[in-house]
Length: 323
Image 1 (cartoon, rainbow, N blue to C red):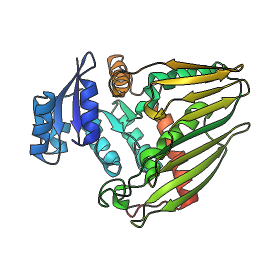
Image 2: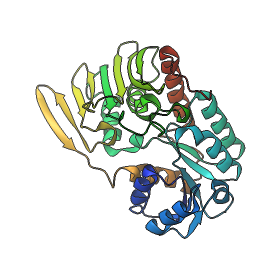
Image 3: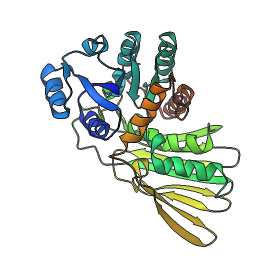
Image 4: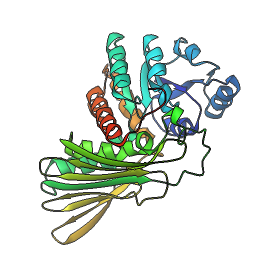
């Protein structure tokens, strides 16, 4: 039985805990929040025996096999490093860090302390995404020439001190949701050789929409993220012999449609729970087999992803006050 600890008791931690309850051989045993009351309420809701009013207490508690870190972006590096230095395995919510130097530090600390570390890029383990990756890799739609992915929702009515609109919390669309379209292009096409990008900013100073073109030798990816409107959230991967459409919302999809030889076939792949089940199982399999990183989403993958995001930020002038 893999014993889980959760750090941060916000919305995503609730979604994760509900999915953890569906997983065999995994159990939530410890919860930490800056508020002991919040941690206790959370622990009671999901039947966890231990609640802590400080993150450090959980890190040093020796009660868990792995910690899921679900706090805002800006604390990912510091908290992951503190957890790993105390000997804990860590699943860190995406983005792993706010820039590449943070992620490099995290990877170094994981190696120094010989502990497991993975970025919680749950879409990588989505059964449909895995299937689509397989189809692309085995040439089902020929040579990929075009990829399109977007992710946007309206959020300008949210609290300006909240994580999405607050520059001090590394707010904006890029790190929060732009990471998904970027991830899809990277997963299917690898590192782009050239990037073009353009962004618009909100009055709080965070970027509120970002368009990107990734150039490859024989392909282009057109990507978008935004907080000032909705978008379709259907992803398209087109090749010389056909196209695959990942059903919306593609980052947590349950199916895809393939268009080839004048025929359109819709495939329902499904998923378990909200979709966190699959990433949880990956972590548990890695821990059970003694791996320190996932083969499907490795340290190098996380470093590549943040390197691309740093490039987009440089091109568009996205800077956070604390950097």
